[in-house]
Image (tube, rainbow, N blue to C red; front, top):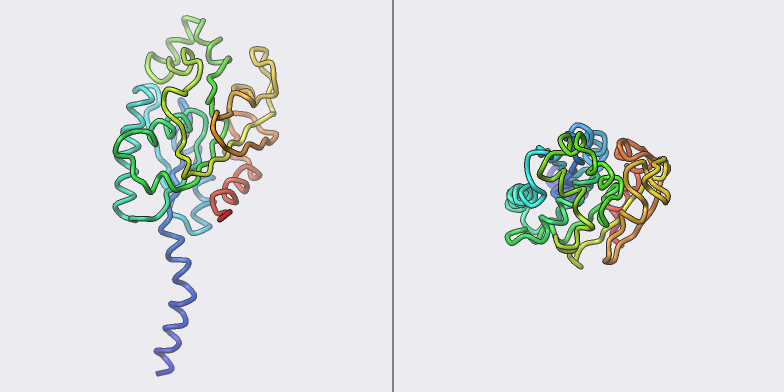
Length: 231
């Protein structure tokens, strides 16, 4: 009898942790990067009890919409394993644009639309720096003719759709950068205002550069706090 009571109490206290652990965080890297750059971010979420998916994709090889279709396939796999549990996101740069496209595709699971998203330096309003690179024949070859080209020809990414109203979205911009092509505070590649959405979101800045913003301890802590918030 004592053993039964003890086991019941143990299950009572650990069951909330088990439920929370069923929530998943997808970490999406940026253009011409790999999932390895999101390893530190993913580890922080695993330490908090989340399942993590360091989602990798060949950024130069496909269009944004094609990457988004593959993301939806993988989101559905996670949703089938944890039905009804929110799927959250932390994205870097182009990763935030791919997520935005995926959430507006037919077949995207509801679990992904009730989660929270932290977007690190996303070029939501286009990138004047990318446009400047697109004027160079050499850089056009480096960027490629698919997602890379979309980055320098797109005025903005409104055509991909908006984040669902059921999601809470936070944008984190870096301000530790100097770029003569960007006439506002920036992280070296994306201006603070270029990261903004035209729909409701929160927006904070840290003294970080674009390429390593996902490695900043302050950014990681802020991301974990936002995803875990119940407000």
